[in-house]
Length: 616
Image (tube, rainbow, N blue to C red; front, side, top):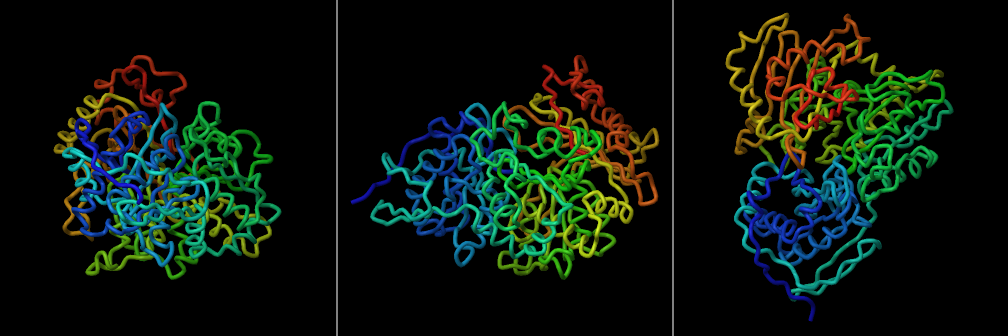
């Protein structure tokens, strides 16, 4: 007999539910409110049916998340709505856990490959988890990548128009904690829910990218030690599978390896903020002999050779050598420069890309090696079309794989999946080190590799400052003021800064010629010497506005490569205050002494809520 679905009346959430840079993110309690999650998921299905007729009914969908609070309950809700909309097969990672790159791998490679029409990822990425913290959801398409703007715009349209959603009054909760298959009789159909090992598909894809035996041999060197911080996010099972079971390292190399709903909460070293950077990954940073600004602490005795960290959904990475921090922009450039050392890139790269705010270190490599180079807005979805050029999705485009891409926000990846991949980046570094240490008695470490890179390509000194929870109205006023100023470049060339470009970044997709242009992606002030000042408003926050300021100073191979980034970008920071009019818009009154960003800028935002997230 089975269960029978029905339509439930609903009303749109005020203003609609607009996906940001990476899906819809709000406070957890908002998602828990009746109709909030249901409206968004049904709107996704309405948009899918509008964009791709007939893929949902009888189709397969992936549903999993990073394990944060409300993850398990949300999965059950999505299963009900999916079944009611005609889905026949639902794939779920064991315990409802799949990292973001693993979801992409599952969509692309599980079974015969490209079986699902898409997947729902339950994550707010690096944002804190908990009932009073953040939750998120995003839809990934059949290529395994984030839905493009035309799809998210369609979803948003439907969230403003929705009148009902399809679900069930009662439907047996599916056991998502046991590997196996559950069948559900509903609407005269047999629906299959398959629960599988969370790590198997992603690790299988990674083993095609890298030489695991060579890496295993390298990490077994007696003079090599490493530590990996999962920050109590979803990466724990993957770290155990890769580092312990595949590479033979002791389990003690893994820090905070248990996935927790609150990512460890306030009592953890990272205060439940699973964001792999110098500010939040305190346990790792201290263990690697550094402070939160990346400066050395102590003699270095007993410090591991290699350290890395992942965020809540494991798509981000941080790389640290012994008392040596590698900026995300440098990490991307180093991998590009050494690409042929990776089995997946053995014949060389064909193309590479970075988000606009990311430093131009990658550009230097692309120029020297003759690679196609692209600058995109922030958001991994913009890289997907570049990697799919020349495929069945865009058959008339030029094939540009093998392809490498990355963002300054600790995201790195390649065309093996369509998401940034924290584990991939760490294995890329270990592979590079394995090759560079062949036949060497003394250990060639992370710092050696980076300094060799600087001596070839120069150094892009770089810093990012985040100001979180500020007034949206005032932040928008600041951006509007700068838009007006870019029209008069000459006026702002002063005090040793000669402007070459001043604009509001606009991106036209070179592959999908039908895609609308992406406007208002950030204000750029680019100097003739390559230095840059960039302002943009983040699309990953859940309340207020987050203003991001990016500063970059390039120094050639023969220049001074030994300075601290803060010292090198200070003149740019001072100039940024003039260009943005921030002191007037956000009066400086009582900056916290611990706020080194505020001290550098001479700023304190209203209500003293300026909380710096310093990235160098």
